[in-house]
Image (cartoon, rainbow over all chains, first blue to last red; front, top):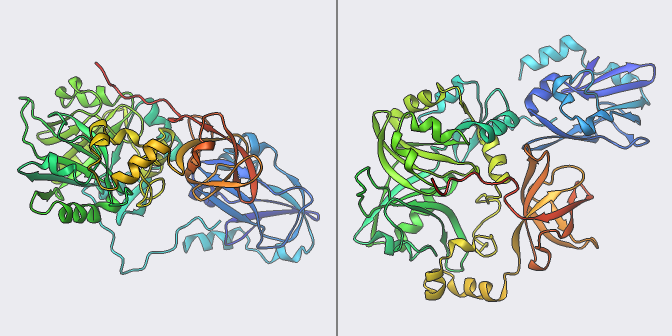
Length: 121
Length: 384
């Protein structure tokens, strides 16, 4: 699993990457009440806003950590957005992307680097 | 995930309340609000705090709000020069919701004003006023300017204010201050409780039964901890305070109301008393009379979002043909209804409950419906 400074995570399996937000992000957001996932087929560039996660109070953008084409979204989030709080780095995933450049994943932080980054916040 | 607010400039020193350290000790997440360092939520989070208040009793620190006594020869009559309420007719022991008006009939702030009486049924004629924290300095300046020579404003800076809200609030508070058991909605009394002098009103801004309790600042921590020692009470932050007042359909100054909004547009016609409507002797009376007889250009309504994301402040409201007709002034997710709810302004033609409209959220037109407010029924105790 790899991580961004914007608190997204990426897990690569072949050329498909699963993407979600980190436990730290879920904790900061508080109770997630709505998740807007991108449409399947959409092409995104690393850094694009590609999903929106809402707490009771506020909406926050989720940025695509890597470039690729959306091949699947997590349908469970429409009925149970609280899965993001319960299991942010597992069942609370947002979308799967067919990656165009696997090197983008390699360039992200590994867990020790992300945890070191969190310690600076 | 740019959720973390930007660092405040180091020179910006936030004001504290007598309870600030108590919030930090409880693990609250603190934010800047109205210039104060305030708890937005405690570790349980907004959703649980909200539902706890609806089911049991929630305790809020609202010490950032402005408390004052207006004294003078005839402070009630004087107050009618800046508000549209019937204050001359305000009985001892009662308080009213009202608005400070500018000369165009726009709302400078909304407020509560009352005549606290002691247990002996007697009270002085001073008016006890509570105004919004972000507006208080300007409010008192306006009152001082407009009513110079008629009232003296005694700001109660040394008092804290807390709100105990929810269906079990009365049972909790009665254990400490037995006299509150005989109060009904909008009663206000000067009482002794927790070993200090209190000003207690049976009111609040969550839609629930409950009380606002003004206490001397030095006693605030002790009163706060005594109330929290009751298992029925939990501390509640500003996040849930906002979602509770939204469900209750109550407008928030600076969002749903501002200096351009009249009380008629703001759906606060009840705050313009019958006597004053006839006398037309308040600031902006000409505009307000015109709006009462011919209807305002826009009016505040409640909206239920029928599909998609919650609509937030600033979202456009469109008719079924896609024409933009208004704007959301506050909106969010209702923890009780589990859907998006909002307050916004639309032309009266589109304001009837049941009207189907759209809200534009991030470019998407989502179905919504005009509904009667409150979104969740009020729990006020009007009769014992």
